[in-house]
Figure (cartoon, rainbow, N blue to C red):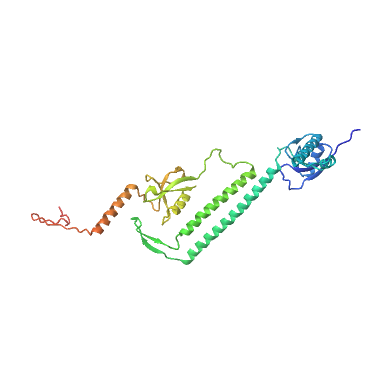
Amino acid sequence: MPSVRVVRVVAFRNGERRTQSGELLVGSSVGGLLQQATRRLSMTSAARKVFMADGTPVLELSELVRRASEWAHEQMQASELRVAESELQELLSSPIEVFVSAGEPFVPPDEVAERVQRQASEWSARQRGEHELEQAKHALRQMTGRRIREQDPGELRAQNDPAQPVRREGHWNAITFEERVQHYKIQLLQRQLDELRSRDKTERTGGTPSRKLYQQPNTKRVRVYANGSRAEQAVSVRANSLQELMDVAELRLGLGKRARTLFSSDGQRLFQFEELQQEQLVCVSTSSHFVGASDLRRQRQIRAAWARADQNDVALSSTPNPRINVDPFAPALPE
């Protein structure tokens, strides 16, 4: 009467790491091991496949023993150890490591461990990002509170702007430059945190975010310069909206007032973010008036003429005509 061969295996659920404790199963057939694994591993679906540690599927018990024996011999040859046959049989009698699945493909345990480690690292980075974001928001609240508490009336300063010749600086109701920098820092931290959360959500769902396949990113890079300055002084900025573009341009260009209007290089006012093109030249203005290149040249000529007049101390005089007694600087006579 032939004897029934019984094997012992340490079963892990497919997709789990080796650090988690497996279940010791004893059986004389692959079907019996699958039935035990379904109950002992608390699987929601019936176990259907058995894999070796290298991902080889096992259909027969003899194949399981053969593969385990080949693996043991390979390990012995790789380590260049010389062991007796009795010691080798004792090694083979130890439980065999297998992975059980409900029909899904084999997932290498090393890959699972790497993914778990990566998720832990991203979770730590997300926690640090949230902490830094809360610190930046708290600092902004402190800046705003000190500005409102001081109630500083500010100072009146003259400026070369016919629409607004005098402006107030340092008023407690105006946002300071440090607050604008802190606003920009908060936007950067929030964007980085959103990217981390989106990446984590993508990995958890196992796919790409729900968006069109070839949808281009909304971020645009444009070249901005201050209204009334030369286009050669433009700097490159990136933004996702018109408001963000004006805030970033205000910081990069060092404008004394809040940016209010955007113009194209030919003076056309921009109302929608979709109107912008990549690497487009954009004029940023603190008022609703556009100062083009011709206006800029005319203003420079007027300033130069007045500067020469003040430097030379020009005085206008006239010589009366001996024949006609007419004052050239007198008002016109009524007809």
